[in-house]
Amino acid sequence: MRCYICDGPLNWLRLQAIAMIDQRQQLSELISVIYDAAVDQSLWENAIERVAYFVDGVGAGLFCKDVDAQHSNVPHSFGIVGPPVELFRQIYPAAVGHFLAEIEQPVATADLIPYDELVATGLYQEWARPLGLIDFVSAVLDKSATSVVMFGVFRHERNGFVDDETRHRMRLIAPHIRRAVLIARMFDLRIAEAATFADALDGLDAGLYLVDAGGRIIHANAAGQAILDAGGILHDVGGRLAACDAQVNRTLREVFVAAGQGDAALGTRGIAIPLTGKDGERYIAHALPLTSGARRRAGIGYPAVAALFVRKAALAMSSRSEAIGKMFKLTPTELRVLLAIVEVGGVPEVAAALGIADTTVRSHVSRLFQKTGATRQADLVKLVAGYATPMAG
Image 1: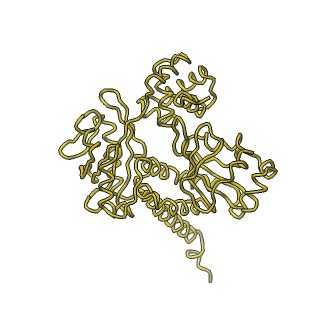
Image 2: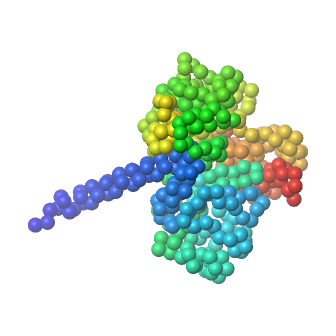
Image 3: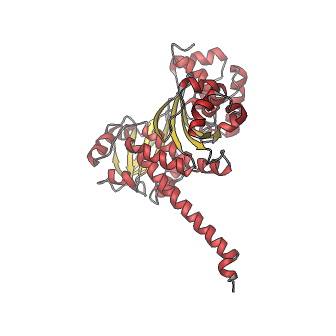
């Protein structure tokens, strides 16, 4: 006799619940590996390999491209490196859409180029087809005045084209890769020994604080202590790290508590926390959990759950910013929004950094488009890059 309880809907729901738990565990372990790579550059290849499999691909990499260049360099990769420059140029006008996307939003090559057009190119015939590749999904991690950093995964014909599940997995993992990349760019370190980790922290130009779940300051490097001494954005309250702004202070409390609960618990909080000094200067803080993996071993001697990195946001360009403002007849607020787009990223991040509503930022961006002739935010980044690079044409 068949057991309805064992084989029926209840059993199916139980199996679904187990599958969800397994996926959460897999994601948690993957996030931990990614965060380890943030402080130990030698771990990037392993992290990228695991992400590639998580997104159901056969290869992946971090791609860095100058705004005006038609090719990118690949500092870290697994499985497959990008195509030869001369072949990539064949699809460049369309494929550049991978680098123009909004931060953390998945974009597939199939979104940019019809497959029947792609298969007719030398890129496909000479490079992709022999490797069995049919698609590529990417997410932009960071944009500056002169460059873009992107993470991408190659899809084999056995994986199929990028679908909703692929995009879902990219959205799950992209914020964590972004946090790791932003922090890794502050220092290049191999953490074989705890002493070298501590030395590197103290030598950072960015402010660095190791804190416990309650925000107690376990260690502050020289740059971090200087920020505390100035008292403009952060200060020491009874041995605990506190922000001058009440809302930011609540955010930091939440971030530190979450970090104490593990890598996955921190989630997307603390990737880029905007801080404003009493003098109006802007800073960005990035939080990295320290509760597992190589980060835990590196922090031996420090009972900390998180590292908070604080750097000044370069939302000003001195004489060059004045030149841009005069050239396009920008108001002071429009110029600030323009520079914030270059430094911070998309509309939500700019709104948080400048302390204004999303709708206000969108209104300013619309006027920037009208005044500069740009049609997308990436064009604004390229415009500023032209003023930042003396030899730009």
